[in-house]
Length: 335
Ligand code: AQP
Image (cartoon, rainbow, N blue to C red; front, side):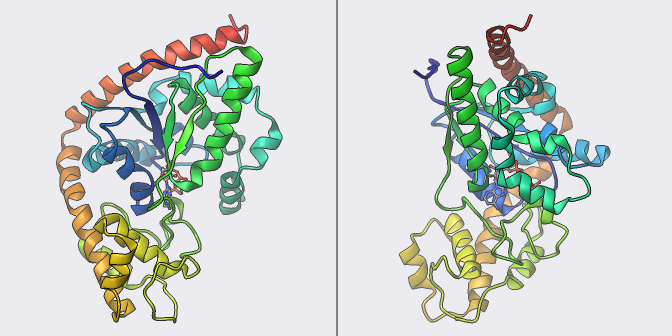
């Protein structure tokens, strides 16, 4: 039997790393869904800076990016009246619980994680144990809050499956305390691909390639320029065909912003060329991101307000996290 918690609404937890510039993939795959569904859930969102250091970071930049990302989440529409927002390293129970979970997670399970394989290939000279153990920290993030749902992009599905296995293993071997979480993955936007190479997911860590990603703070001119350079194909037909990754990715992005059906979109583009497709996609993205860019400037300049929200967020989160960690620690026989 799964542990149930009695709140009015089901609880969601999700996080995002301050590893670079938040991009369209992060927004459409995760953050937009957090924002749009705030009314339905009890929401806990976290800037996961302890995850960021699984790849070497410049400490000064990491600090700046952490606060920038907090401001960006508010600019995207995270409402502090409806959601708890905090910075992961402010709550030590995340790393403490991660250790307990590390002690019950088979090495074989961790070595199957595709993110570990991808990221270690990208950084072959700096593969540290933290990167290997990343999924246990993520399980701790989720399980600490007894979250029922975890809204993420498709790339995180495997990690959530691991968190589920870990929760079930702990509950079976030490006693029922954890809720077994479920991923919440939207169909549209779940996997936004790089504009330069639509066979690879859009990723912050590929942000050094000039036309790979659209950052939420890119200027309208930059957005237009990057879309105009997006890789397509030579077929010349504008249709939702998953086998034609470049055009499919552009249409997918268009749909996320325009909210029209696939049929309406295909009808609209009948007889039009790729040049017009790219311009139209860029236009809906520019308009969709405009309010975010404007709010961000305002929010980032009010550091006292930002700190107040994060302080309150930490207090709320800490109360829940301490209680769960204490339960887990006792179950495992730690003094
Ligand atoms: N391309 C994507 N399409 C849809 N969703 C995506 N997400 C990431 N990339 C895409 C979702 O964004 C949320 C936050 O991700 P993260 O920052 O915690 O880590 P990540 O998944 O590793 O994202 P990046 O951009 O690829 O960062 P780096 O390069 O630093 O690893 C998650 O819900 C994720 O699914």
